[in-house]
Image 1 (cartoon, rainbow over the protein chains, first blue to last red):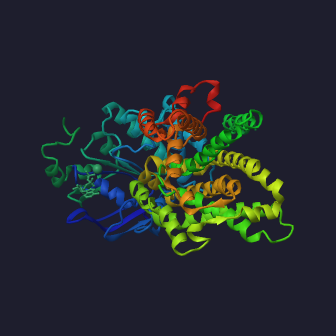
Image 2 (cartoon, rainbow over the protein chains, first blue to last red):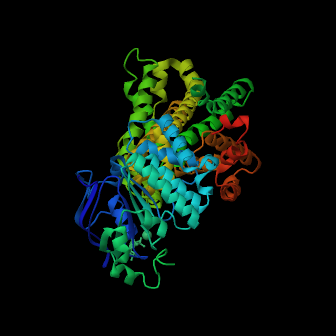
Image 3 (tube, rainbow over the protein chains, first blue to last red):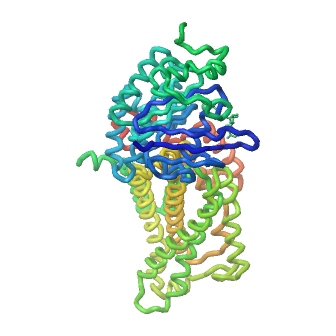
Length: 250
Length: 333
Ligand SMILES: Nc1ncnc2c1ncn2[C@@H]1O[C@H](COP(=O)(O)OP(=O)(O)O)[C@@H](O)[C@H]1O
Ligand SMILES: [Mg+2]
C-alpha cells in the first residue's frame, strides 16, 4: 500500500534555529499515530510544514501520490489535510455551526457541496461530537476545551484523509480524554482517516490508542516504532526523565 | 421553498428605509435634498461595507473609485453627446463605463496592495486617491486640473427641461436603485460560499487558508464588487447630478472617512448596518451644520470615536444580539 503521507528529509529553519531537522516519515491511510516530544521539539512546526503554513528549506513532502512541498496551503485542504491548532483558532464572531460548515465547504468536498449541504454536514458533525447545545453560540464565546472540540468537528467536516491534531486534548479532564480519543478513533476507522495526534507529554490515553509512536527531539525524529516498543526505548525514557511516562507502573 | 424566500427577509427593513426616505422626499416640501444626501450615504456605506465590513480590510484610498466612476459618466456624456438619438443610452453607457473604470482601478490597486496584510494594506492605500488625482492633473488627461464641465453637452442631449429633471430627480432615484442593488449583492454574498470565506478570512486569515480558502481570490472579488458599486453611486450622485467634476473635489479623502464612519457606526459586515450608520451620521451632520455651522467636525469626531469604541459591533451589531430568539431575528442581519 502506498503511504498517504511521505516526508523525506524535511528541514525547516527559523534563522539559525533548526526547528525541524531532516525528518523522514511515512503515514499509511487510516493509521493512528502519536507524535510526542517535549515543548519546543518542533511538533507544531512539523504540522505547519505539512499543511503549508511554512515551506521547508529542504526535503520533499508527498501526499496521496502528489508532491505538495511547495503547494499553497489553501490547495492542501481540498486534497484531504485537516488540522486543529494548538492554540484554538475559531472564527470567533461566527457561530459554531458556521465554523464547522466552513470546514465542509472548503475541504475535500469543496466545489461539490453548496452552503446548504455544508450546513447539513455541520449539523451531523455537531451531533457526532456532541456540541448540540453550543451550536448557535459564537465560537469565540466557547471555553478553551469546547473550542478544541469545535476545531476537531471543523476538521472532521472537511472529510479529510489525514487529520493533524495539535495538542487537541491539552487541558481536558483525563476521563474526557479517554472518551475523546476513543471517539476520534471510532470516527477515523469509520471514515478511514489517518490521524496524527501530537502531544507534549506521553499521555496514556493518546499514546495507548496509537498504533505507532514517533518521538521528536530538538527537531529530529529519534524514534519511530510500534507504541509499546517506542515507550520502552531508552532514548524516550531519557528525554522524559523527570516526566516519567504516565500509566507506566503508576 | 418558503424558507428560500425567508432568507431575503433581511432586505425588507433596508428597502423599507429607502422607500420611506423617498416618500418623505417626494411629499414633504424642501426635504428632497436631505433625503437624497441620506440615500447617498446609505449607498456608499453599503458599497464600502462589502469590502471593509466583510473582509475587515480598511482602504484609505477608497474615494478614488468614486472619483473614477464620476469620470465614467462625465466622459460618456462629454464625448458622445453629438451622436444623434443616443438619448437615455448615454446614461447607461456612462454607468457601464463607471463600473468598468472603477473595477479596473480596483484590480490594479488590489493586485498590488491586497498582497499586504491588515494594517500594511491600509497604509499602502493611503495615497491612492491623491496619486490618481496628481496623475490626472499632471498628465493633463481628462481635462487635467480643470476637470470636466459637461452641463452644456448634457443639455444638448436632453433639452433644458429633461436635463434639469434628470439632474434634480432621476440622478437621486438612480442612487436609490444602486443602494438597493448594493444591499441585494451584500445579502447574496452573505448567503453564499463567498460570505463564509470572507467571514473566515476576516476572523483569522491564516486559519482560513489552512481550511482551504483561497483568501486572495475572495478578497479581490469583494474589493472589485465594492469598488464598482461605489463608482456607480458616484457616477449618478456626482456625475449625473452635478454635470461637472473637479478632481480636487472628487478625490477628497473626507468621503473615505465618511464611508468608514458609516460602516463602523452602523455595524461592519451587517446588512442593515450601513443604513443605520448613514442615517445616524447624515442626520447628525445635517443638524450640527445648522446649529453649529463650521464646528460640526470638531464635535463630531470625539462623539464618533466614543461610539465606535463603546459599541465595536455598531448599532446593528448590538441590535442583532438583542433580537436573537425573537421574530425580528429573521429580518435583521
Ligand atoms: N515562527 C517562528 N519563528 C521563529 N522560531 C519559531 C517559530 N515557530 C517555532 N519556532 C521555534 O521552533 C522550535 C520548535 O517549536 P514548535 O514547533 O512550536 O515546537 P513544539 O510544538 O514541539 O512545542 C522552538 O524553538 C520555537 O521557538
Ligand atoms: Mg506545539
